[in-house]
Length: 381
Ligand SMILES: *Cc1c(COP(=O)(O)O)cnc(C)c1O
Image: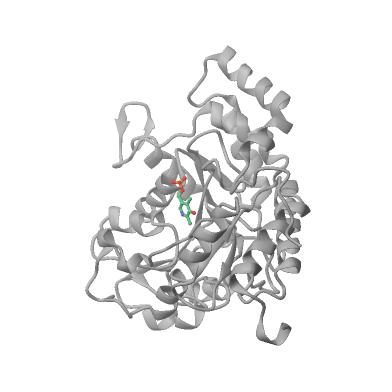
């Protein structure tokens, strides 16, 4: 029996989420408008304090977006020309873009077949005399093996920069990710688990000196206005965005629980489907920025996506091309085939609708359409 849809299915549903929070959001935004303090208004400092407490890191600094945050982190650590930064080829482009923008060279390690995160077993072999930092990503909301990565960074005297844009609120062995790195960064792009009403981001560090350096760089390299000691950028968090985030941060754990509940329902309804549902690391919590399934064969994904679309189910691919194969980041050391797991997984992943407003009826419907296309596992027929 085919179920019918009673509500339109969205890939992301910010409209319904914000409707629920509208009175609070409107009040905070109106206060900012009344104050006309659009840059460095009081909500920015309040947010930085709340974010640092939430993550368990001493210092938080708001900035304009998650990409700037990565670039500012690299600049503050003095990473540039001739330096290598080890990262994953299977992430949003910003991670690698920031490394290239500061003049450094990305060095890739392939990913783990189950978590799709940087494979910590391959890390030490990628370290060279030029390596300055390791930059792991906690992809889709699931922490990388951050404890092992931290030990390796420490043992080799390398800086650890966590790109925590997709996993704000996730934990590894009970400790929030984003609190392991010498610097960590996040993004408050609207569709992230904690999203603003436009671009926004933040940086975190336990070190006071480094915090001030990050802050100077984000404000044109000046501690005192019009006195520029360092080469910097203009990357501030707008007061209006901070006001929105102050409201939404209070609900972040609730949002993440709603995503986890949706993921558990998907797991249940897709348990017989001929595909791989998201792996869970027993040491970590997964906060499902994406619910991404892995298809058994290349070539199935695009057809499944078209089929789902014809059934009213939107989906998305995160990410279709591993970064070492992108024209913008071409590097002869990484030809096609150099990072086989990332390359193969990029051809087989599909992200299903994932947000705080999904209900069981929708998840059952989506799962039913997926199973109609991919079939059931052989052992299950
Ligand atoms: C979203 C994202 C970024 C960039 O954040 P922006 O705020 O869009 O600049 C960086 N890294 C990862 C892994 C992301 O998902």
